[in-house]
Amino acid sequence: MLLALTGVTVIAVGLLAYVNELTKEPIATANMKVLNDALEKVVPEFDNNPVAECDTIFEEKNGKQLVQYIIYPAKSGGQLVGTAVQATSLGFGGEIKALVGFDAAGKIYDYALLAHAETPGLGSKADVWFKKGSRGDIVGMDPGKAPLVVKNDGGQIDAITASTITTRAFLNVVNAAYAAYKGNPDGFTSASQQADTDTNTSATTKVEPTDSISAN
Image 1: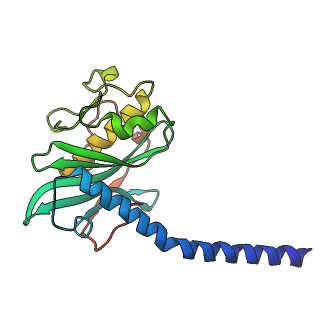
Image 2: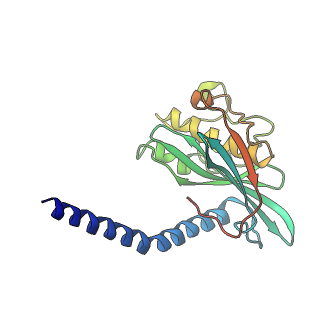
């Protein structure tokens, strides 16, 4: 029985390793396509390769370096026309990861949700709720003049119906992305920021651009 169990375990581990190796490249390719498609939507038209010129800012927690922000410069004819920043925040169902685009003047150009675990039909509406022309429209706003805050907290943004927590989390993502865009990754400016960072101290490290980056 022991030999049989050992044999089954070895075979199972081998199969898992084989499947992981088989799917690793297709998953990376799919993630890169999602990222590139999002970049084309959230910043003005560009002719450079923002992924190859990106900067990554790491956050150190418990001795490990975790990606905190990724900053993608969009250029046209060598001139900066916009910047996209990948940032995350904790929502109602889990982590919300978004790519927030700013124009050359620092105003919000557009955004794209890269990943979230919010309630379908409620918090998941963040994908469109804050788009241009929608009820919570944030396009054209300048977080540098006034941090984006939900109306429930005395701010100017309409919360997603029955999803105030998700709205706060999303606005935290936008404000944090703006702070990173302005070179102040620790300057989390949202007045509705929750106490998820109160018990942790962290250090951030900025690294030079790499040739490629994953959307994970």
